[in-house]
Length: 153
Length: 153
Image (cartoon, rainbow over all chains, first blue to last red; front, side, top):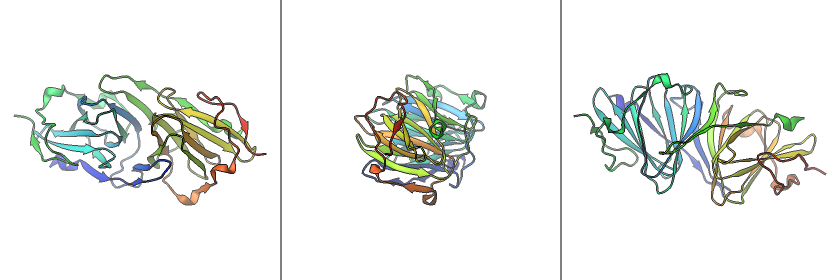
């Protein structure tokens, strides 16, 4: 199943008095497919950024600040799956091309998503859809990943 | 002069209601020398992480949260230079191998440094020195870069 291609990889946090070190991505990590660009996407509390589908880009998502709920949707099967990332469940979410992705800030303050992408930003390889395109239930229990849900009637 | 090899590159912040997008590093950026690892280093308010010198790693430092004062020191000339990074003066600091580097959190809350390094972490290519090794004056005015200062008698 296509949603199974979304991979959650636990990451290390090294506690230090002056400030922790938090791993994000190494070129020797399983599944590393090259470096194109690294950028941050901030998410305000309760705000949703959805939906976007990449045709070529593989995303590697890490949330060092706050808490973010990610939703991956497979158009063909009409199924979606939710993942929750933040320092408390510190992990990297790898999203291959072809899946719709949306995310929502679920912390009290601004959350920060780092994307280490394998190609540079290119609007031509992105499809966009309105947030209402899928009937995604963001309220289902999810820690760190939720049950699959039908999002297309 | 060796300190002139430290490069400050202004970066774009794209304002969005749901949460800004903040650039960090692209493989097509001038000076990109490969991807080895990306990791976060948190810095507590007033805490100093110093000194470390890399023999092979080039650091690309970005501060999406808080405010961090960076100090680069050239052992040969005994000179140091300070740089200040944060969302308000949003830029990337590229530090080539061979220079001593230290940094200090100067925000009221935890600051976050992202390092996009061209090689993976390897303790064998790092030299460390106590924070008192150089007489570095962290209090000098600096925005985004300060005047050179003599740090060895």
